[in-house]
Length: 187
Picture (cartoon, rainbow, N blue to C red):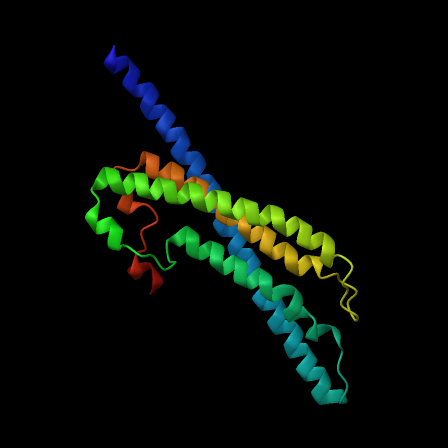
């Protein structure tokens, strides 16, 4: 009876792992596109402003608004990527004192707190967007809503990352292996 039950558990664990990996991969792609896209658009628009100003002694105007709109997307994309790769600063003094089970409980509790916090911040951010929706950049006509939307999207990305980390912690043999930063990947 136990042997018949094992393949079902392994299959369920495999499906969960694949779903978590797919969600994480999607978050990494979206965060990378947001960060690199924002950086590229800011660079190109500001470079175009410099060239036009140099050639004509007049500015285009709109490129100076791009950093205000896109920099929050760059920052939040980087923050979510840092969370996905386990590269945020961590205090591990307590982890040394706890065993494997204690660390798993601590880390699971931490993910629950992170999930609740960031989804709450995303919810509060919706109210901020309503307030800032009337603020408009004069040249582009884009509302400040787009800049603040980066915060909400980033908070949701961090909340989902905490959920997938929670699932990874439940499935991992060693809780310290989850989202462990590998310095050699940075080279």
